[in-house]
Length: 114
Length: 114
Image (cartoon, rainbow over all chains, first blue to last red; front, side, top):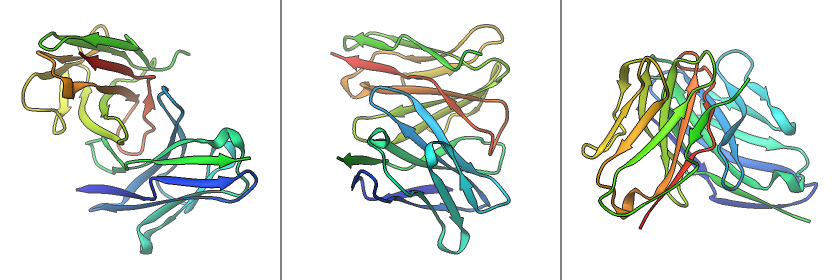
């Protein structure tokens, strides 16, 4: 079984400030981990993913995330927030099996203040 | 290279009617996933299909919901005798494989049941 917990349903930062969105997962096998972004009334766009190898993963739009097995975490960060980063962010886990399905967290809404 | 296509984008049905949601995966993708997103919630897995086969339907309600992915044509999510609680955004994703392969999402179909 797999699950995802996103801590904080709403996060607000000032433009230029650090963005930190938290994600903890549980998985009975080595996980594959994903971060997606969703803009209003649109589908999900992949920001980055971790499968194997380097635990620090760089994605699009300046985002990165670090897989920490000991903490079962995959937090998303960006050094400097931009107004265009305001959106909803979803963390997801997929087990390395033939099931293929992903389990999503409930999402974190990021607000960026000018 | 067209992405995942879903139609219609918006669908309005009265209680008791049938809703048919269509999903055309990305070119070359043979794996399709359906997710449902209720207001203010994350995505919940419904069903995973490959061509002509249902691989995992553990997230599908036991009644009124069905899905297919025929050899030719789009994947169809069918909801019979819709109720107000079926109002949600339904997202389709496709991938070329399993596990850590990236799932590419369509724009979603927003179903409103009056």
